[in-house]
Image 1 (cartoon, rainbow over the protein chains, first blue to last red):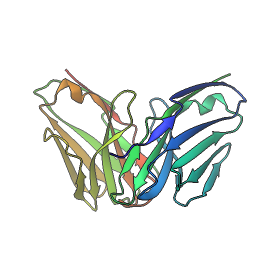
Image 2 (tube, rainbow over the protein chains, first blue to last red):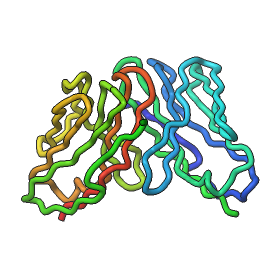
Image 3 (cartoon, chains in turn brown, green):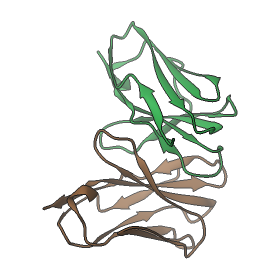
Length: 112
Length: 113
């Protein structure tokens, strides 16, 4: 059974705080690591797809890093805004199957 | 257009009913997916279609029957469901099965009484 773990489960921060979350995944049979943002009542929105060890991706105030050898990825949000409030999901794509295995998500609440 | 649409948004059905969920994309993607998501749990893969052929069935009970009439459409036919099948059903599509981002629809919230 492939396990993808995310921590923390939930996070409450003040507007302007910077924050980060962790995604742990199997270090074998790695194909790609995906990050999604999922706002309530909306579709999960793709943020990043990362494939190479040491990859760093950035989209506005959000960035992510990838370590495939030790099996973790960090997502950073700089200067959190209330509109960043959402659940952030990571998903591991196995080279064996190509299937996405999702973590349980980190729910971020940014207070004005 | 990076939109995946799903209908209906909400569905309430009895255990003897037959209903269908529909999913549509016009991005030219050749892989389409059904996921099931229960509250506070991650989405779980149910089925994958690749080039309109079923390529993965994650041991889903036969009361769920997928269908891919063409490359833009994906249906999930429901029959004799159980209350524990109540969940959010998400559809997604991607360029192909092994690479690239999966684009998700907003889901159908299903309640089985």
